[in-house]
Amino acid sequence: MIYCPNMHKNKKLLIAANWKMTPPTIQEARKKALLFKGIAKGYQRAAKAKASLQVLVCPPYPFISEIREIFRNSPALVGAQDVSEHDGGSKTGEVASTMLQSLGVSHVVVGHSERRSAGDTDEVIAIKLGQVIRTNTQVILCIGETVRDEEGEYLNAIKAQLKAGLARLSNADFSRVIIAYEPVWAIGRTDNVALSGHDLHQMVIYIRKMLRDLYNDSIATATKILYGGSVTPDNAEDIVWNGEVDGLLIGRASFEANTYEAICKNIALPTHSSMIMREAAMRKMKTIKNNKTKPSVDKSKEKVVKGMKRVKKGKAVRSAVSKKTKTR
Ligand code: 13P
Image (tube, rainbow, N blue to C red; front, top):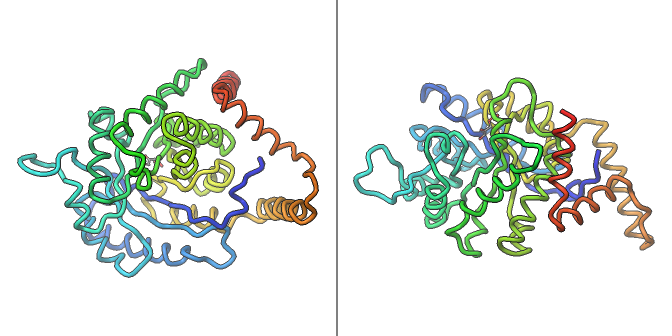
């Protein structure tokens, strides 16, 4: 396990459920929404929890209104899976951001790979982002490479998606932007190919470096980053705590409320052994702080710090990842 500063913060993680095109009926959506409402209450401030969780459900458009009513006076939030690039008028089949806002939608997902493959270009995505920001709603911008190549070309693809997607925003708009890193090759897989927390952490460092290069330090630090792609109850704890993300965007594992709940439980109430490791690390940090002595170098921390320095020079992720792909 790598050293992980998030261990020391009791932060609020956004656990977004992308229901995609499920469930098939409003009756089932209602039942499911009631279960998610219960989960949201339970993990808002769970006793002994390492983090509080913010439950966000992104159902298909026709269910938004009713689910919003079910969630009223509860901590659960409702989001949308997409939005139109237009703000109204003769656009058959489209849904404007103002309409979503008027229903009480808190977050809108934009640039999901399943919308990109249905035709959304970077330019369209940038316009959609602007529409959501204009209506004072949070936007979740999805980015992610389709394949990983040994030369690290996919890192350029991520940079290009980030740059193009955010192109129309001003620095002030960033308080409403969340980035969801969803490697396309990891979405919807049944063979357990989600990134490990360690590999994800490299990507998170890379994305923050890109945000710093494109904007500034405070945007790079403050912008929330989620992970999506084959998250399960088994890998969620590693992904969140070692990956250093601010939450998850979950597809299939959110189709069943009990699977989603198992993910929440494993993140907020981590397993005994990892809790012991975290608590030992916290004790060590406290001792260092109290004694004001020079900390003895923790090997795993040293590794990450070295990694970050190399990322600043722009080469770490490329080498780390190409090493990984070679060993596959
Ligand atoms: P899976 O969790 O099914 O891989 O889907 C991820 C996703 O697309 C979330 O937006």
